[in-house]
Image (cartoon, rainbow, N blue to C red; front, side):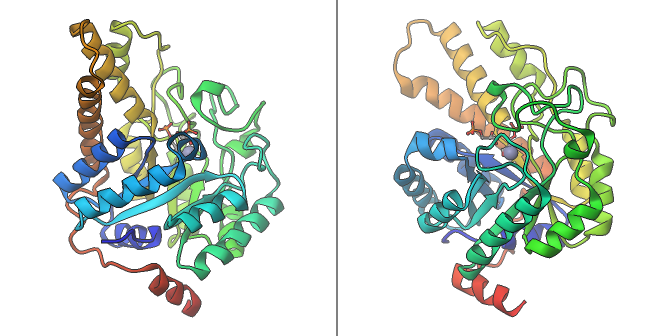
Length: 348
Ligand code: G3H
Ligand code: 13P
Ligand code: ZN
């Protein structure tokens, strides 16, 4: 089936009480791994591309590879989502390419570094909602600034993108009342919230407690916004066995902890419907490739080690799909085209 709007998957996830992983895609093997997992488990799936991914692959390759996946697995509902759109230009170019969902991340200014004002965030997000909904495309907004409550900042550069400099507690934890105002004023389909998670591998220096990973904040937001789909960014769990494998085979990653799956499951019970996972796939593929070369020092055919990496990524995706509850949910999801979705927005 053609790509479906994000809103359709999230509405179904709310109705049937589960969460959906949004996996970042950057190359053919990752798309294959995610789609093989989705097919094996009959799970709906969200494929998301950052600006960096679009540059790395080239838009045309990215979109054509996703089209190939749709042809190969016609029964799997798939969303193609722009991750962290920094400007209207990024979001509109994604819409023109056929993405069925965009994130307008107005929590930061267009430089992707400077925390923005509430008014800027509302106005730029609403601008994209008006454009996107006209053509049936869904919109995710973000309120609050992603970052660590351990060191009150977004983290190091290699951790991915995020705000620069020190952040305040008010910035690092989404305010429930502001969230209500933001959703009312913008009309977003989904809201990413800040609760202490950050991008990349170095999220927490010790297993996180409720002081630095504030799942209760999700409950507070959900109580005030029971019908808004919440999104958790920076939700990789940083499996310790993968860190060990990488470091045992020449890697030099610092000891770090991610977001425990049980915390995400608690979030799902409290209204989280989209869970962003990128780093765990990176770790799984790196661990597989490092082990492969350690065991096969004479190997030089990229197919050999990419095959290992792809199957490690697939295993990780299957695990998360089961844990978040999306496994087995593909049957029963109605297909809604973008024009039909646009009509629904007009009526609403
Ligand atoms: O938002 C962060 C995602 O992990 C994407 O990261 O910009 O390195 O592709 P990236
Ligand atoms: P991780 O770095 O925890 O995988 O988060 C990815 C993400 O939030 C993409 O938007
Ligand atoms: Zn993110």
